[in-house]
Length: 230
Image 1 (tube, rainbow, N blue to C red):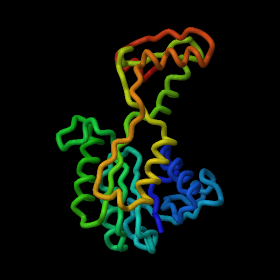
Image 2 (image 1 turned 90 degrees about the vertical axis):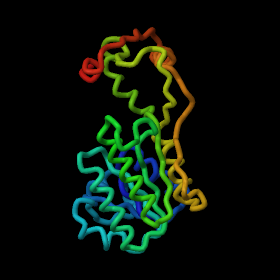
Image 3 (image 1 turned 90 degrees about the horizontal axis):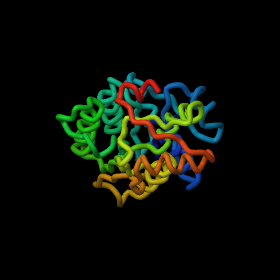
Image 4 (image 1 turned 180 degrees about the vertical axis):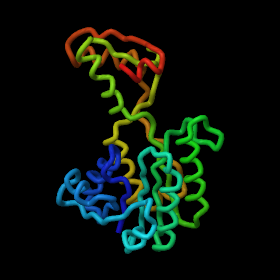
């Protein structure tokens, strides 16, 4: 039995769909089963478990041999995921697949606190004695949708990135497909998988957006703080 933590999120829900398509036997650990059911539907088996409440995790993980760990960004991310790891040890889980951050910045001295936390969780999982695999997806292509409103209202794609910046973006659907393959093939254990798509520049992005909407979209580069407000 496969356990999935984070199955209601952007990439987690795509993993759920990929596991369903493969007729895999799995169960999602969720804090709020009613809310999860509303999002994932009636066909997904759910069990209540809260990573901030370790007493809830023992029964939630009962019967799992494989566990997928994915937490949304939180100041408590490291502790929550370590809680999942410790519960997995006690439950006898034999294989963990960890959804980490992108390759850039995952180190103990990273300027990003989130990447620091991912680093420490990766190290804890690797030294746990449990078979493991780590996925490190790059920039989500779906994140481009955060730029959609200025495109619609002003005909402008507003970003802090230079036009020549190339990014190997990947769509959450592809992340879910890759994660399912890693989960279902335990011979993939002991490796870190860098999940990317082909490199495209932001200039190419604005060209494709212009084609899609049928008019020329202006590329506007602004300071990071201004891009967040756009």
